[in-house]
Image (cartoon, rainbow, N blue to C red; front, side):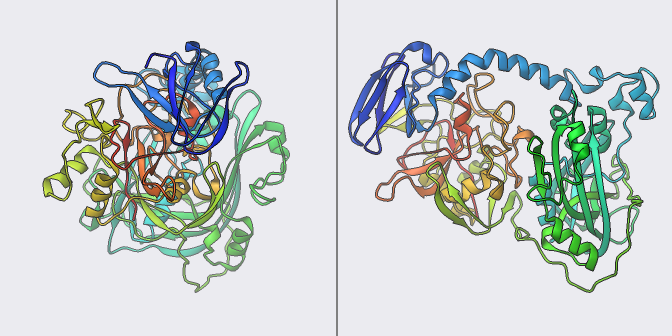
Length: 585
């Protein structure tokens, strides 16, 4: 098959417009094939791509070490063509925007770019000092700028014991990572607490001072007359007994990198919005008026968690309310014997209003069930599945934080529970198709996703771990962030550097799992878009053997292919270099 020519087998009887401008249309029955000729200029990078409003088959021409292949996906021709026209400008824009937002990068860092004498002085530095180097790390970092998945993970783990974290603060570069690490023998005690606060950031300096955790990713929301406002209500606090250092022998789980334990957690609800400074300042509250709080239609709502009425009730009655239970601020205690961990001691907040105590027992969140190490909880919910909008109901479950890695699969093979046969070659079209970019047996790819496995091999691995493959509905619910109904796992922003894909620079294979922090989904899962497609347990059609896989892969360069609603599928025997899996429980 030559460049620019494709074969499109249809799964349903339907007519699809290809390109109104060229008058190209194709009609085909499920078992029939229709050849179409397309202008080569339509696809210079993803050769042989054809979008047509429904199921899409993509032809991958032969390349050194990789044979010609075909696969299913959805896409929009308009998006593909616009992507090609605008890509040169988009790349320039990305480069321009990325530089001032970075903090702590090896090549160009925020300290290299922000050097205002007045700003440095405001942070206690000398004129000429970089602002980031002059920022004093917060003694109690606020978590509103953090990703929602990490907040949810913290909330789930705190039900099991004292949470271990890795914390590092040098100037504006503040890093906080929740680990699957819990301290036993010490419990949090709940106390009523009442505070209502608001923060407004009009510059990157303000962001690094007020919301250092997540400031870099929010930098594009401020400046040029725009501001970012965060309103929040604190309605309770969880505390451990006071101690100078937490004994390391009481830690259980993945604690090797832990530097601190979370000794104090302030609970409540918040809303965050971005807009014109004057407009945001005029708002009475952005947390408390309708959904998200703000009534201003020009403001961009960035986040809203918790219920203001529940928070008001919690403040008034001194109770712990399930809908006002979001971790918004933490105090940290260093772990004994880990001298590199500087203490982060809690300090009093001046806006506290005493409230009456209560004997009410804390109520666990819907997602506070225990998940094994390496998995994160996903709450129950109902939503419209896929682009067809079928109603789907999901019960609470656990899902692997990352895709199953080469090393994890190899360990299963070593026990005899899994098969390693054929994992170094691709198979489709009833034939062995060569090595392609299969990861098994390749040096340096232990932490890459396991690819070139068929549906049965994926099922067998999960079963050996006392797990299973997720259903299609479970997978999409997690990728959409539950009720957030996100377009992409990370939110509504178009893909740039949040995923392992070929939309910014062409890739020749997978990336290490968990390499794209900005692409983390709401519940803490990584690589739900890009890297590899992921097998699910669901059938593509009820009366056919084909199984669904989700998420897009490293090979594709059209943004819509990374959408949380995109579905694809193939025969269970299908093995290819951009298809892998993760397990559920």
